[in-house]
Length: 113
Image (cartoon, rainbow, N blue to C red; front, side, top):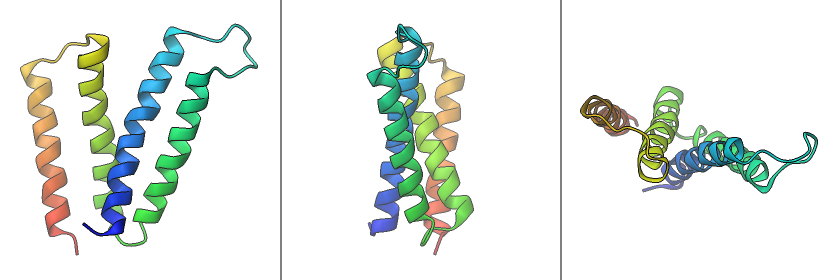
């Protein structure tokens, strides 16, 4: 796997970190509105790093492919984390949609130059 695809995969993983940190932040808001909690700081750092890695990957990966993989990894990972750690529902329909998303990501990756 070359560097651009690795950057893109890490950007997708950081999307999951970003959304989970936001969820945790909403469960434990800071006492003062002008003070960031460590959860909000983590969300901001993960978002920054995710965008940075995505921008690096875009130098070599087609835009549509990169965007689908970045958002797809983030969405699928967030659904799975929500199910495992937050007790969110995971129906057969949701699993089917994740499978379709993963198949689409693999299809775009294999057809990208």
